[in-house]
Image (cartoon, rainbow, N blue to C red; front, top):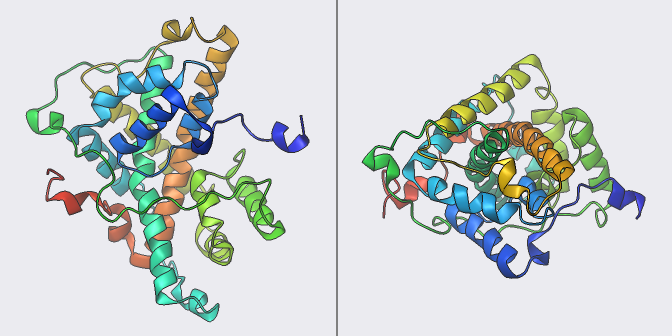
Length: 306
């Protein structure tokens, strides 16, 4: 096995899946109303029999208005006050970016801003279940239990190509190394792998928007608060939102289950960081209030109902 493969977490990309696993990937996207499957899910797919059972238990809960309300709250609370963030547009225009390209980039940020908090909620539920902590089981109010529309909301585009480390340019690899080092992460997230399609913006984003705040006490406190809030929302679901270790004993070895527990625990913090980052990039373009608002869901109506 090459050094590059050893440095990458085992994971299954959407383009590689077939059969039942492909159906699970597609169903996650359609239910959460997002155009990508998160890193933690792609890792779970590498463990035989882990992802699909966990998703089947979680799906009914994440298809409700309660889950959307939880995501909205997490998004609002992920805003670190901007305090003088500079709009990236002038620097991008100096690099001959058109208004159309800037709008395309902001739409990419909106897609991740919409979906990251949903995955934080999903991963938190799975992590809690594998550690034996379950929701209180109280029934949802009728308006919270109402089902969400299925599929992408109007305006969400098909996700851009994610730039792999083994095919990235030297410039992008350097940016990836910066991302990993400044966050203390194992690798670039799906968000940053898509933003790598815009390397000149990504460099500006790291220099001007992310570096000044990442791993500061304020940033780390915000990350902890998001994880704690996600756990509180999960505890309000009316039933199990993931599988316990006993369910996986027939398909996974004990050391694999222990690995899954560790991966999900890590992924909660990982995706909380990325949630803050993408919201902060949106803040730089459009301000704190816009960054904390749902960019797509309200297009379905005042409460998102169809």
